[in-house]
Image 1 (cartoon, protein in one colour):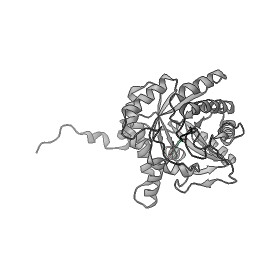
Image 2 (cartoon, protein in one colour; image 1 turned 180 degrees about the horizontal axis):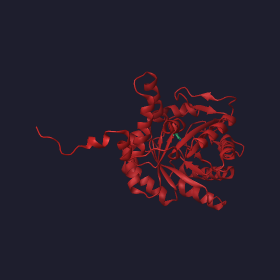
Image 3 (tube, helix red, strand yellow; image 1 turned 120 degrees about the vertical axis):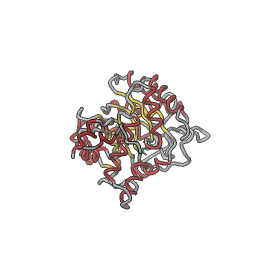
Image 4 (tube, helix red, strand yellow; image 1 turned 45 degrees about the vertical axis):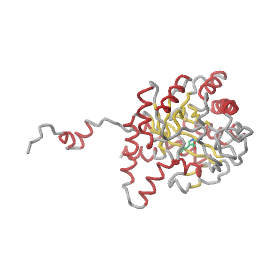
Length: 325
Ligand code: PBG
């Protein structure tokens, strides 16, 4: 039997050696915490399929933002749940609407201590649950939706947002939003574009989180799971239109797309560890089938390893605490 002369195990012997040669870092500043705010909530409401995540009141949102800043998180991503929804999602444009108020509340609370980001999309606001307005045939009307996104961007900027996150997958959305922001003096407001966004079964728990009553599906605008090249194409288009950060979503089933986008663009890349990915780990851990904390850190590390500079995760605050311990 031959004695090995090359022994990779040498560098795995002690925690110090392992730390010395660790290729991938995971730090609170790289994590973004998504937060849901519900207009008519008088107390934080638990979301059944996302244990530990709630629909916030305006007050509990402020507290969560303060905590995020104290933990050194890179940012918070805000989602609004209006009390009433309609066909055009008019609550999205109301200055006193839930998301615009939430942005102002968050920004007033944390200032520049962490980054305040907003989901710029209509699905939380429409009664049909689609990311845009519908045409006479019931299909999502791309260009009519763009005009509303431009107005939403102006409203979010007026409320003080740092980065808007267009997530509706309408063609041309980044260009239209950039133009709208620049035209009203919002040149400092950045765009975190949900660039490669796939039609995914893993968004399931998010529907409960935002009380969505989606009829049909999003396959007419979100991408097909089998298409990686197309994800790169979408990211390149968004960079050309002025995206400051491009995002791949979901993360875990699309780590190859994260890597390909990372290699193709020179702006920061984000990945969204979404609701269903969170729910899978929580459900298995609740049954004692996996070690929850280890699974959380392994999940987030794998997304960073694939090439994400920034990770959106419902575990952001908890991971920050684990990383400090
Ligand atoms: C669209 C949006 C969705 C998510 C973030 N932004 C839902 C969708 O596109 O169907 C999903 C986030 C998650 O599942 O955690 N506004």
